[in-house]
Image (cartoon, rainbow, N blue to C red; front, side):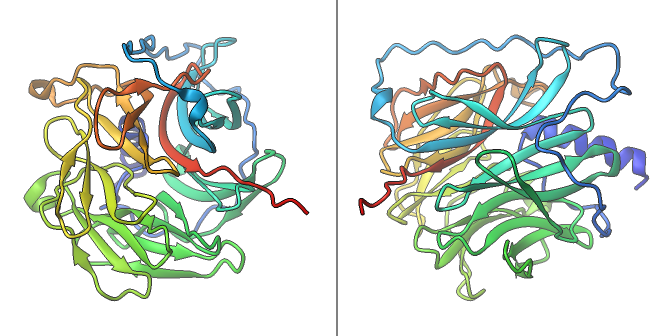
Length: 366
């Protein structure tokens, strides 16, 4: 595949899904040596004709919601238009779980995209993925929450997505390409050592650590049979006891464990994609959401009462191929048992997706 086609397929994939895409055709290549500043400014080579996205129109909610009862912090990826110059930016943001005190940790313009944030367990750092469109390469970066220090982790993979930080803080799972497809890898952010965790004849992606750190759930894309659909698997971190969660056909999106480790939330492969939860044995398969434009990236609240997810404000039309290229994604909360979704009032003009929810960190009293 030539460089121009690869570059543009990568850009379409990132914009369309907002999560990175499971790679099937990338060839291995050594990582480039450039570094990513925490804050980017528009390049002088940026087009003089700004690309304007459709206006974000929140879906109204009828039910009052006790936002002030939500605890912890939420990290997210975003995409928006800078009102000062009309240029598109991609961002990593942080906010209180109730939507207040939102700020950007990273804001990238031009040919760099950022997404897939994941909290370190102690809340001191965020890991995220950076995509350099000109080179069709993706990298893992770690930034402290003050935004004044950033470190790049070299993975040797050309495509990287779906980051998940282990509960003990010593490992980050991710999907990365090897040869002609994507598999699951684990990197130690301190020693920089990498090991391959899961691999098969099909692409795999979107790993998620269990709360006790003993297992990793992930999606395996059985592409010839199910289009962009995937089976859900759980495997011990030792690489043993691979189990398929029966009755689940998921699609490209983050997955997450419930805090008690008994259920997994995922995006379905039916229609335009709705949020479901399922127990590890395949039992109690439960549809949680059903909005007109489809949903993705479900993440449990630390207390297990709610799920946050991204919902598109476009009505999904399956006759035209589903969601449009520039779908706007908004953050919603819903009771983990189902019910009416509530729009989370984040003070941001960008698309919001790729959530990571950090529990409230309580400092012991001396």
